[in-house]
Length: 351
View 1: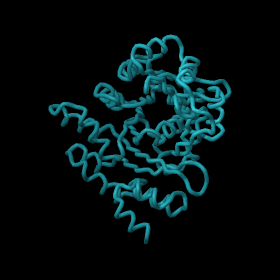
View 2 (view 1 turned 135 degrees about the vertical axis):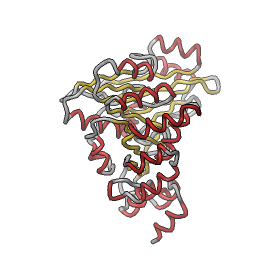
View 3 (view 1 turned 180 degrees about the horizontal axis):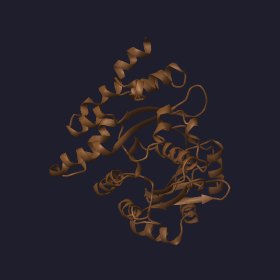
View 4 (view 1 turned 180 degrees about the vertical axis):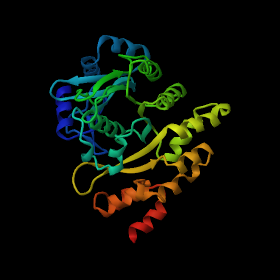
């Protein structure tokens, strides 16, 4: 089976990922389920040929040296992909993540209404968190697009790789890709601050230097959007604090308390009412009470603050999951499996 045929099958089935492994037929991940194509098993020679078809010579050279390579690949009129090539059992394996080309409207993502309000913030730090494949990039892209259609501002995105390709509408948007346009997120962010931005998207706060620069940018009047691989708001705050040496943690708590505007934590569910995915979302808005608990190292109180401020638009993950279940969008089994407090949610779903 040719590479283009596999890609077309993935697009037709709305797959999120393609896995090409010698000794197995091509496998697609369709709405979280691994789905083999009805094709013969691939040979080591065919997987290498597919890799060499996609990769530029510099990537091939790097792969031969390190046995792993990350790069992007595009097929005109079909789609774009984030690709990882690796060795397994002496043959090349490929994992290809589909990159959506059309930015979905924010209203089409089944996100809480409060997320749209975050796009009106003039400054501060907004974090969208969750596991890999939880829809973080899509949510951020929709937020950027909403601002692109409303404001006349300068937006700089720092990504690994560039996923959604934006067209500048009312805003001027520059997109920089890790490896191709900058050596690291920290380097890109440091220089972005000298490029007269209003809004900065940092693909991921991976290290202390990037986190420090992002917080400083938010502190100096920019709106900074970024992601972390954390599952809830309190864990997100603690992850950032833990990046710093113990001697600096009190200072960074104060800085984070002043700059953080919101934490949105996502978990994706397979829909039972129709094909597709839907997010369960925890939302923390930084009220004076939240700023106090961050500053005073009482982040364990954040879940209670979220629970008692639902009228403001905050929501716990479990309340979001319960709403999805009662609206007939997700199964009871999935709801309980992804819950923060499964036993409590199980009693609530029975009621």
